[in-house]
Image (cartoon, rainbow, N blue to C red; front, side, top):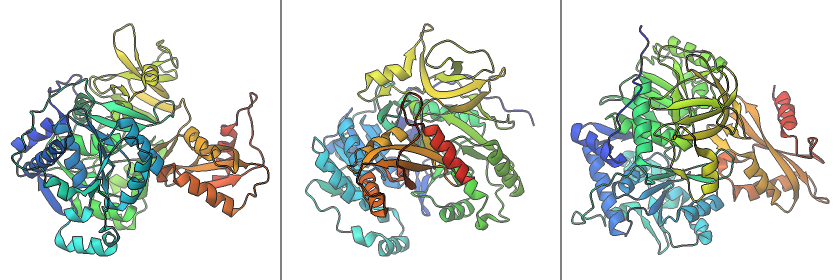
Length: 561
């Protein structure tokens, strides 16, 4: 088979994200845009739902440039809300529903969000977070059962929903379905306005230095990334094909690849609001998606699921891995698994950062070079430079990965200093994104990821920054100082462990661990919580007196092996 050669340059329509989806509603009105637990929504119906939600937001006073926080899993209300905000030029501030109370307060404050959409299961936490928000916020409460067929709706309420039927119960909160009723047909909306320099979406990441930051992204950023990905993939995202959309909408990989890239090409998103091995295997076999994308832990889990023994996976056209490095050994195992299950594909690894939406590099369809993260997307240029400089290193040598192209973020929200550090305009007149990752490039332009320049732990595809956790732990009255490391884990790739030195007189017992964990739960997202706490009387130090975290990592990993 001749190797597929992607185009090197694409033309990007001067359209908003909503307009790109609306074009598919014109082209494929009756085809499904998304499916949720067997219930399909056509592109025409999807557009109507978006328009209705947009009218409701407009009627509520939300205008171009206003921020609304979307704190949701992959459910229909999240998609309707996201594109409705884009329809009227508002900013979608995307937040993890499992964020800690203090994090939600921070996200609402920094974005100046006027509203927040949240599932009923997380309503109480958001209500508590509002106590530390400096401006009025209206809470919109979505109920998953409102999107289920009657049988599943009753089953869901019996299993989970009955405890949340009393919500919302405050004057400043309203049910999403009641909010939509205000979006009357006689409410007139302005025409969509495309502006490639205007913030359309805010996603959150630690940034390249590990401090929490809002990443401001435009319509062009998302549309370009979606179109580039489609070209690099070399397989049609088209009407009649399906993507198993399990990567969450508050994550660049989920929003950019699992959702927007699918919807602007007329394919169907099979929405998964949560993930576990059993539900994933069931969805894979029942829905027979043509594309799946996820983090290494998802695909590693596939190898051990009894439900997939002997299964025919020939319906798969593509499997894409991101969020963390895919080891050569795991790739070999997955490729063997795919072949044994009649899927004529290989797992393909991508690389990118939220600062450029998501992936900007992908391994080719028909070839593989061990350790490589592939070739840059069209209109995206990679260079390897001496860290922090604009001096290129010789071919094959290691340096910092920097890149440029139409998907680069507009900047960090209200943080010009960190923006200037990460986005640097050079003598060629181009702005380059300094990734903080070390890599190399071979003579054919294949890129190889080596390691991170800054400390970061990746667990289940989520970035966890040790410095942030250490600050929270050290703020506890029982703690003298701490060190957080990532240890190898067969399921999560890495798990978080905290080494803690207590203050004099504090007993290092289980009650103390419980107090520290309760403190962490109030300030740290659930996925970032330490899986293990170990008390020490002292921690190893470097020659300059810093905690030698690498020694603790090596020691912990030796115990794991």
